[in-house]
Length: 364
Image 1 (cartoon, rainbow, N blue to C red):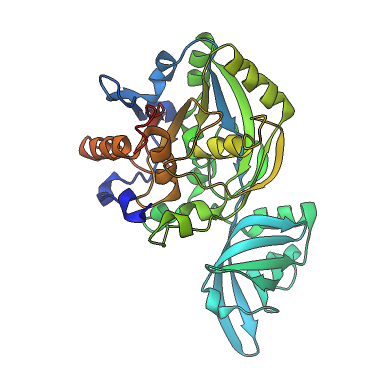
Image 2: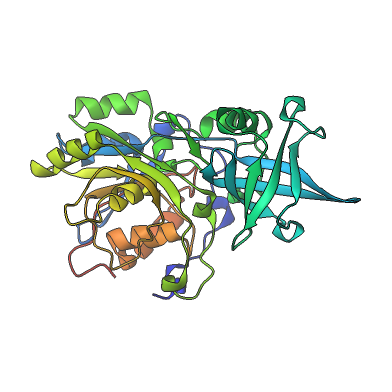
């Protein structure tokens, strides 16, 4: 499909720079393709009223790490400032990272992040460029590994705020809590699973009282989630891999939900992507652990998900393509036009939506 079909104009003042307070006070646009009405303005706190007892919400329990590293490359007398965003772990001492400016680095270069000294104990973290990929990617081989590397990244790194926020304001202490969900347990993400940011203990109590189940998966969200699609056709876009896991316990629980006729509701596109990645075989949803680069566009047949709770996404992004595949492109174009007209807040810290699937044959 042509990528320009997924384009739209978004006024700058619709981009949320802070989350709603409290988190569950954000708005929620309910989208029911073919429904009457098709679009309903509601609130995140109303979520339980749109679900049935026995339905299940699936959350991503990944935890954002301080994956934004600032440092220098020294080559002889030449010194260049380097900004790296870690996005996929490739070993105990290695990370793939998006680097700016990538042209300043060649294989074998040494980069020091943090302070000016040689060792992490003095406030720096050193690495060697061991490989280069496409789109500004480099493979960094760090001098430390395993938990020592993890600790060093925490010591010198910064929360990797999305570029549409970072370009408007700097990171601060509040982001350290704002940019984590209450489910965050497993270190590894460089971007938050933002639909989960809306949840509070009060909202979870409301859902529990309504008989809604909660289950967890893991997808360590990579920085590639923010990359625009630069090709003219969706078929030629290359997705970056992310690591994820679906446990046998979660598989059994969700199969029981489906067997009794209830809905599996994905909280976020990240939960959706790992669940659908684990559902590609002939037996449907199965235990999964590994990398996925699943790319979902209109025409995709969903295997596990019955509804999707998600935020509002960037134009021409793989995530807007995904929601269009789920609820229908025409429907999502109308939904986004309504959201812009009625002042919904967009992107990571913005408002949410609850999407139901397109009617059969009406995915366009």
